[in-house]
Image 1: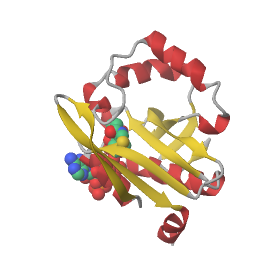
Image 2: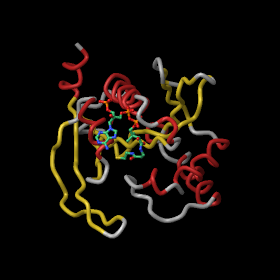
Image 3: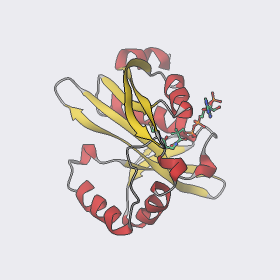
Length: 180
Ligand SMILES: CC(C)(COP(=O)(O)OP(=O)(O)OC[C@H]1O[C@@H](n2cnc3c(N)ncnc32)[C@H](O)[C@@H]1OP(=O)(O)O)[C@@H](O)C(=O)NCCC(=O)NCCS
């Protein structure tokens, strides 16, 4: 388990799955995600089985927030698509419990995941993709040190229109400089 003051990253357990089904069926939560079809409990259980067959490094984490009720499961985040030669990976995050949005938990989760990526997994670059319809996420990523690297124009179609997909990245050297 990776623990910071307000958030921690742990392995996903079977008990977590009903919460993922609820969150990922919420149109507001998945607006910025690749998922656009309804998700069933059976599909989520299949995802869980397949996820646990992936190499341990490539399994997403459950995100818990340190709330007034103790540690509470609020979402998922992780690194995937590792290139072990060039030492880069892609980052993904979803806080499904909307009660926890705009309270700094997403930024804290990003900071913890970057620390894990650079200090524990020895990555040199971490990148992500974010949709043009997600100003909150764009703001958070810039705040924690990501720079815009390029834009795939009109790359996704959501709710009746096309949106750009921005590729953002942070190098280990840039991240280290920000730690000082
Ligand atoms: C995107 C997400 C991870 C952000 O986490 P969060 O905990 O809500 O974000 P934080 O509270 O750490 O920070 C939110 C920041 O965005 C700002 N913000 C909120 N709405 C905004 C908007 N419409 N435009 C610009 N900034 C906005 C807040 O003011 C805050 O800025 P500040 O820290 O400078 O005051 C989370 O909301 C989420 O998971 N959303 C659903 C799934 C998703 O979109 N995932 C990302 C896919 S790329």
